[in-house]
Amino acid sequence: MCRCPLSHWLERHGWAALVGLNLAVSAAAAGAGWALPPVLLVQGVLTLATVAALERHWPERPAWRQPPATQPRDTLVDGASAALLLGAVDPALKAGLALLAVQAATWWPAAAHAFPAQAPVALQLLLALAWNEFARYWLHRWHHEWPALWRLHALHHAPQRVYWLNGLRVHPLNHALNTLAALGPLWALGTPPEVLAGVLACTQPIQLLQHANVRWRSGRLNRWLATNEAHRGHHATTLDLGMANYGSTWLLWDRLFGTWRAVPPGHPAWVGLHGAAPRRGLKIGRAHV
Image (cartoon, rainbow, N blue to C red; front, side, top):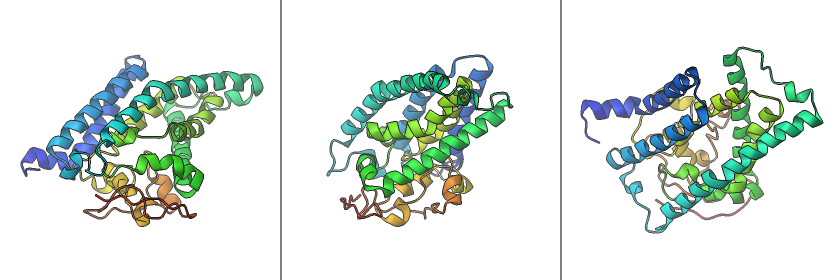
């Protein structure tokens, strides 16, 4: 990266600026009465396109701009996974959750109205975000610690580089378990649709930027949010970093449950499958960069 003023600004503030821009557009769309899902779809595509362009000009690891020699088809696999996830698995899950909400109202009418929908919208959003992050933290952690779940999650960690498309390389069952745990209870308890859309608006930008191979230095934000710096460490082949920083958007639960780790400059040296993980003894391969 050249040391011109623009590149210096992008390095220090680019991550926060891109997240902030996404949040501002979502807030403006909601304020104008627009339906958020289509807006978020367009935002997601534009965000990924922006990251892909930034990776070409300001990469954290220049070698990661191309598939490694040992995995020449990783981009193809990642693209196929993204197409399956976005084209079939996620729409099916959303339809299923809507049906779950209807059934919950029939089976347990009191629970179907348990969410405090009369509270201020900001409080509703905070409660929904807290549960979403709590559930995703534990599901992610269990996918590393339990051998049966790790067999699903290993697909996500197999690539020997971290770049913009990695985030959509997820086993369909892994994605289904995460989504049902995080959003199923919210739907069943009668969380208003606009609050659920707000959860997606707040979390999507951070999740889309987690795997960015961009030279961003987010400073103190790395201690509390799942920035690309903090999450890159989670893809390390060593267990000290690879079994840490599980947070999907926040790192609050990592800090509370003792799994937060600072990622030293220049680390991780290798990314990919752990040398010996999860902790309960499943043996899997090591990937080198």
